[in-house]
Amino acid sequence: MGVEALYDIIHRLEQESTELGIPSISREDGTLLAGLAFSRCTEEPGLLVDAGAGIGFSTAWLVLGSLASKGKCRVIAIEYDSRLYRSLLTASRQLSRFVPVEAVNENALHALGRVRGATLIFVDIEKDQYPEALELVEEALLPGGVVAFHNAIFPPPPASFFRMIEDKGWPSVVVPTLAGGMLVARKPGPPKT
Image (cartoon, rainbow, N blue to C red; front, side, top):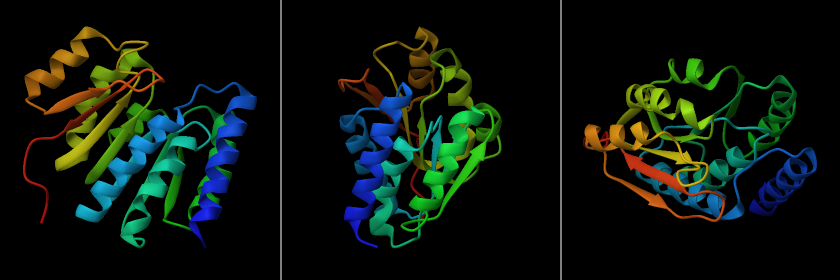
């Protein structure tokens, strides 16, 4: 299956998100996610998580970045809304032709509470839940793992969220993308060898 087929899926999911009026990441954010996934999957194949996956547009970008792992990375896409989940399930089946993708219909915080051994987590849920999500992400990520939180600039997460990142000593940067920015942080510790 060629990468052109994956580009077609990405384009279709973007159009469908727009038609359904689903807030989603931008292509610029997607490019950043694909780059993070590429970096993580070529460095340390493992588990990528999309918390707040919608119909799978952000999931598809994670899949694109993980292609270089030759199937050694897998993706879990979490979506709470049953209406969106039905479309996510269809997308995950299509995306699984490239890398294994599991769609989960559950509250993202509950699902994140069970994740262990992730190398990359993307969080795009209600911004007031970011502090609680960060606590769960800390347990879910391997040392050296990376997390990206969408909408780090607009609409802004609670100020306490940024203080938590700083207090934990996680190296981080807010990338000022057009769709609200993205905070990217790394859990301290050496990557698993």
